[in-house]
Image (tube, rainbow, N blue to C red; front, top):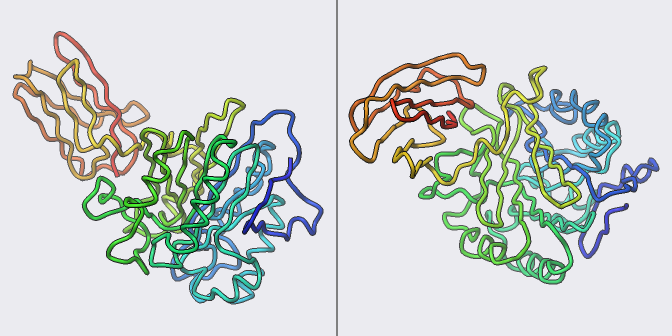
Length: 373
């Protein structure tokens, strides 16, 4: 089934010239990938896309259910030239799949060049009865405002009753605020961001009231030592994913799988190891709620995700408890005991990833998933 393209939709036409397109399926099941910061390491102008990402093209092509991809911004290095975009187009031709662009700040450092090649920077399309809305926060300092805001609302209002999922794609980490639960996460850059933006005042409330499942997909992480590699969150009808590449160790992209019931699952793909699933499940990194609470056992483990320390609090006077922290291979990393109401574990010497915390008393044993960032 070809994607239905309406209004300002603009698919990369290079593949159509090659006679390639999205093939029909017997069922509604399909997958697509999102890849952020695909120019790669800051300060390096690769010929085309980030080399470790290109090395995964054969893997992408081996999965017939992947029907297209979206590059979620900073596709080319700063101050892009026509040659930079020519190289990106050549890489997309090698991949052999339709690819959409959600532009980043570096891509828009030469907006006239981009628009002369690819057209509008915000648009939508419908595929297998799912709505894809691509936005450009670069127009107004990370705000979705003016004509673009009206376009977004009109597009959704015209389609939400007849589509299933809604995917909203852009580059910037729009749900970050310095005083919310996402403040512990860091994007690659805050370049061009106004002091106040309208994500939480206008964008989130607009989508939150819909009956559809809505997925915000961004691509400005993973490029440097100071930035988070990826993040995931979900509440009510809203889900949030931000990913990216360039730092090498944490390089990643995400494949979204939509089954015949319209349920969405994720494959978080490592770029620089033989184990494609080295980070584990993306949903294990859920941010909210910011702590794990066992009402039955009256135990609170926080913050989670954690960084340098992890607090364990027994809401009532605790029984003598053993506390063990394991890595995903089952190796015991820390062992402690607690016979008071509070305990703090030092995590500063542990690498980021998924861990398992087991608390055992003479009455119960409880295991918590803990994320270290």
